[in-house]
Amino acid sequence: MQSSFASARRHQIAFAILLTVCLAQVGWWMLDQWLFSGEVRDRLEEAHRRSLDAAEVMLGQGVAADNVVAMFPALAVSEDGATIRIDPAVVEALDAERDRRRNRYAWEGGFFLIVLSAAIGVLWRAVRTEVRLRRRQRNFVTAVTHELKSPLASVRLSAETLQYREADPKTRERLIERLLKSLDRMDETVSNILDTARIDEGKLALAPEAVVLAPCIHETVDSLEAAAQGAGVTVEISANDELTVYADRRALAAVLRNLIANAIDAAAGTENATVTVAANTSGLETVVEVRDNGRGFDSADGEKLFEKFYRPGNEMRREGRGTGLGLYIARSLVLQSGGQLSAHSDGPGRGAVFRATWSRVAPGARTPEAGT
Amino acid sequence: MSSEARILIVEDEPELAAGIAENLAAEGYVPEVAPDGQAGLDAARRREHELVILDVMLPRKDGFAVCRQLRAEGNEVPVLFLTAKSDPRDRIRGFEDGADDYMSKPFHLAELLLRVAAILRRNRWYKRSTLDRPVIHFGGNEVDFRTYRGRSADGTEHELTHKEALILRLLAEREGEVVSRDEILDVVWGYEAFPSSRTIDNFILRLRRRFEQDPRAPRYFHTVHGVGYRFTSDDDDR
Image 1 (tube, rainbow over the protein chains, first blue to last red):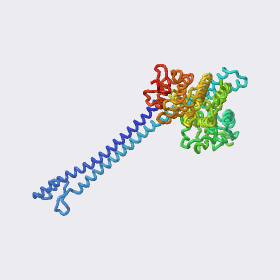
Image 2: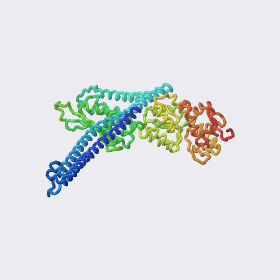
Image 3: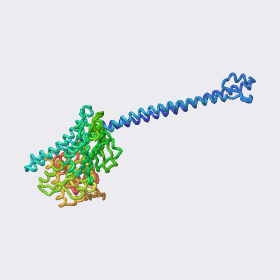
Image 4: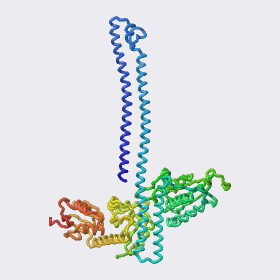
């Protein structure tokens, strides 16, 4: 892990060097052409001046001015007819030719620079994405290690305590309950990893149907009640009993569970920690908002939250539980049911709201009850 | 087992923290649980503990940072890292940050209890020994084991780490005798010899650099080749 990460960094550096060399090369080429065009013009003018010298010698030898000029096409008799000079039109043409060349090189060079920059920009992005993904994957491995090993340690500890100590029935019960809870956590982590693999392989088969939302929400909140109580978080629900969504039942439950568990986790530790789950209709859509008054996030990070392996904090500091897969899974599930999932926060420490929308009915279906 | 030892558990996995706390209580210790790094640091500042069992990956503040900060504040409470990170680099980092022991998850209950007992025993020995003879003098050097401060002959002040103080304490207590590397490992690092004997050599080198006028020709910290080390407070046996 470490070494592949370092090699990605090396690629980036090599890339920057390559870019600098390319740009320098193009710049040098343009400058060279620019100077050369001027030089060619000056050399041609110099040649004409030499013909002028020769013409003047001939004039001095008594050759008629018209005859001399006829021999040197670049020369002309001055307007007063007394002297010979380089034809101003020729000088003008030289200047024009030089400027034309310079112009052309500027365009060609400029165009080349743009193409080069665009190509390099594309490559750069690819490399940077790769680096970021690798860093996140490393973070993921650490997170999964923690997510599996901590409950595993707890399972082992409970089992060993049972084996090691004479426990009265009440203690036994408590230990077994703790053991099961830890197993649930491990199960959840493993399921998340497997779900992610399935999503990535496109193997997730969803069977959307019209689902009545409120019972789903209540069920999820009930199953998280213990966790919420443990964390000192109050969960409030506001959902109309008649609301329906068109979604896969299991996927819907998974999304709700994910969002609500996240919110409880984020709210834990704040004063008056509250999570509100509100469901409403908006046109043909049902909107579920899960709001907490906890940790929040930098609004610039809103989209990152849904990226695979993304976790706030770093690999050492763990801001809450999780593998960085939950929201990725949630969004994939919502998107595959034709819905949307977005996140908003006013900033760190100022709470967050996650907003999922689903179609209320099967897309294109006309249900008479849709008006309720 | 000597009881009443207050032990602070900093662990964000509530089931695990509760399990450890119950087992420690059953052994007669007095456990206290903190759910994140910052809470752990606050708890350690608020009252004295005989041991802190510290997770590494924690919300708000990671375990390494907590340990570093405690040490920076002069809190020399023994720290046992209990973490999912089992990479040798993490272990080394833990020890560098001032840990006394390091266990990876999942662990065996019996082993945890043994290690806890070993750390407490070690520390109590140190405290008792310090009470008997809080300050030692050798050559022009002076070391105060209560404050972990030393002054070398040239007047330079040194701050000793817990481990350095333990080694010096052990050697001074057995002045004139050869103390084997294994014994040092056992007393200073606990029953499972994690570090190699090279680690001890490095600690001795550090002590020499601080308190010997010429570290290459030591007068107080003698190497007995193939066995261990001997400490002498006067330089008559050069």
